[in-house]
Amino acid sequence: MRARVFCKAFPCRDVDHRGYVVPGIAIRPSEISIVMISEACPPDPRDHFYARGSPLFQQTTVQAFRDAGAEVESMRDILDLGVYVTTAVKCSKTAPSIGSSTIDECSRLLEKEIALFPDVRAFLLM
Image (cartoon, rainbow, N blue to C red):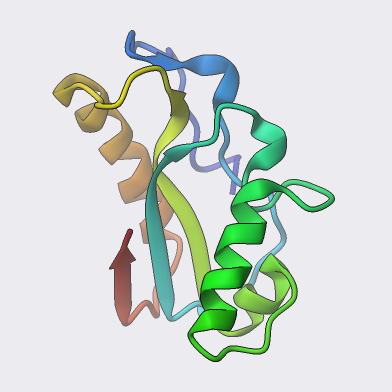
């Protein structure tokens, strides 16, 4: 995935580029039918959905799926349900809001990322 979706120049000035994450996970794109998109990456990349261990974004996402009745323990379990989770903004926020130029820049990356999944039937915008 990282080979196809990446930021070349990091032009955005209202995000922290040290928090840049594009998931580098092994998936079968044809098995993904739902893409869930949250706002931005966490301040610490070790808290991203697909980071090793028990990252914060994974914990909260797994709990949300459990609350909805899914029997999941990890992001791998969520992927196995056909749900891919990502962020609209690939860097972490430095303020409560994100500027329109950053949204425009990151929307191009998100568009490339979404294009990797030919069988998506639903998008969940968080």
